[in-house]
Length: 126
Image 1 (cartoon, rainbow, N blue to C red):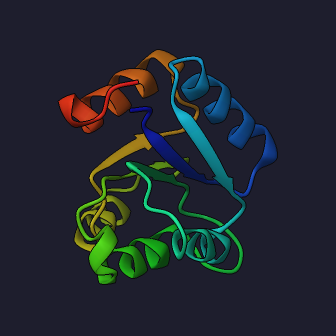
Image 2: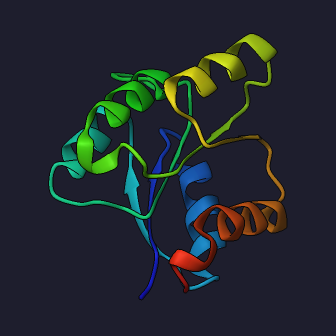
């Protein structure tokens, strides 16, 4: 089974870079431009992993995380934060909202691949 990963990122160039990195590993990638759009997509799909930015229009990543954790079908879905933010208090807010992990942009594609493989673990293979 191919792992399905939802990328929530308002920057087209960053979305493209993350998509290409993950598709090269065989993952199915679905893209969303912000948190509100992502919630709409999540009404009809359950991804194996969600990767979200924090700073986005309409609904930011922390608000998205809180909404995801309220949905029974997504309560245990891993969510990685991929953001340019590295402040300790913001990371703590992310953990409190339900983030599984935190990666800082610009990211190393190899590091993203390793973290995604580790988070998905043996339950989903590409």
